[in-house]
Length: 259
Image 1 (tube, rainbow, N blue to C red):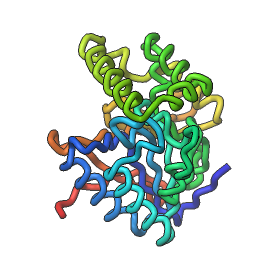
Image 2: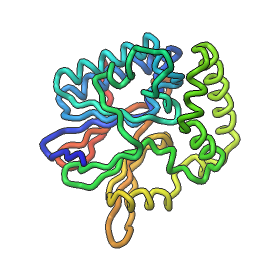
Image 3: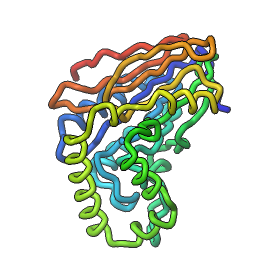
Image 4: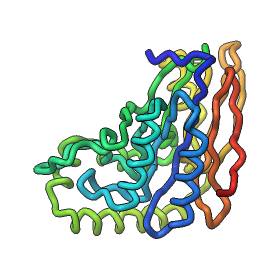
């Protein structure tokens, strides 16, 4: 298990949704991450780094710039970790015939399993993207099981890049339309699923993104206080996006700063 000691500052972020169509968000997210991770021992990026990811061979100029920034942080001593989300579940999945290497390697990062257990400043913690915990949304959970099937992924990655982008755009449009018709509760985590995941990991702390409902939740479970920290998504047009720093055993939201 990864052990992060109290003298190692940690920065967390998720749901950057980087896209060429959202230049202001790119500038904001990359600047904030580079600025506030320079003195951090670890940077954890918990999924949905990109609005759409159809394979490592489809990395565009935005992805290249992001990778360069992360590689620079890694070379300066910050350990960079990344996790797949529901929008970039094909991250690091081998593409037939592509020899450009895994995207995480280009970033100088290590890909994490989801969920991922660690010791954070002496506390048993669990990191997750968060989508697997939204178990009330049965339609999405069926899709999640399908799109993470290795055979299904290889079938998709065997298609041309243009075909994959078209399929991905159609899937995103359908997903957004479905969200507008869905009850809000279905898009949030299920408490029983949260407790089951924390039980399995022996964790008293859970950090995740995905739901776009940033908050800190505390409750009692088996006589122990549990904490669930939800990270924010990033959208400069709506003035959203914030890093979380873990320092001396405590979470501290990093105030956004102007460049």
